[in-house]
Image (tube, rainbow, N blue to C red; front, side):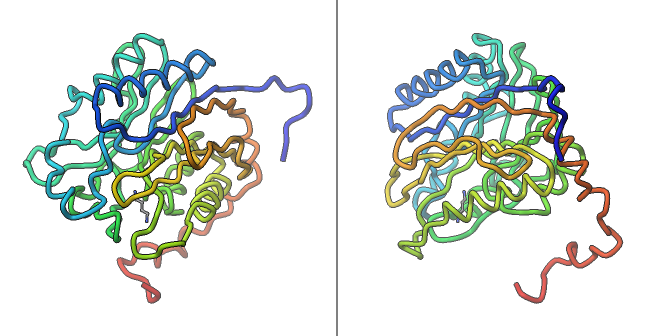
Length: 297
Ligand code: PUT
């Protein structure tokens, strides 16, 4: 599929900031501000930030998880949303971030992504649906599974979804967004070393899976990851942007902070949709996908 040469491109410039965690909260916030400002100065109309944007990755072990409550935030008035709103107003862009959202009943909180408009409007509030429980990623000790489904938000003239990290591996989730005509999925991420599998590098698998989920659903994928060492965890950066053809447009380094800015040609979403995958589905055959446990699990 492809457009004729004469068609004017329908471009949306997006930015992402790949960051390491700083123990000094003020220094961390200042680095965040600088990254977002740099992307905005290059013309980004939305800037996207890594998972648990302002805190350390506190699900890495049982000891840290036991102290997770200190990171709980209210919505919409918590510090992460306030910082995103401050930057959005200052720069006249949308700002996306990720935080630990307090639950009304006071139990485990939610791992929630937000997107704030320049006028302070909360464009998205999307709770992480799939919760990993593995050595180095004890998220079940901190987060309850999200209940907000697959909401699509209009941001800077495009249709956006804001799932979080582990959600990015699930083709079912990408399809649920794809069926709603989503053009851009943003996945704030915290991924790196595997505590029980030293030497197992998931980075290429991660990138292939996410970019293929984008290809199969005619979507751009914007994936800001953490980078650097936090205790025994080593986050591998390599944040990226992929297009609806499954091509990686930009990839950040593995070993340092970075700001990426990419032009998304939104017409490519329509081109890939015309390839026909979504039109020739057989949903009446897909019952096994909704069985709680498959035979290989
Ligand atoms: N943020 C969770 C990543 C899990 C990788 N095994």
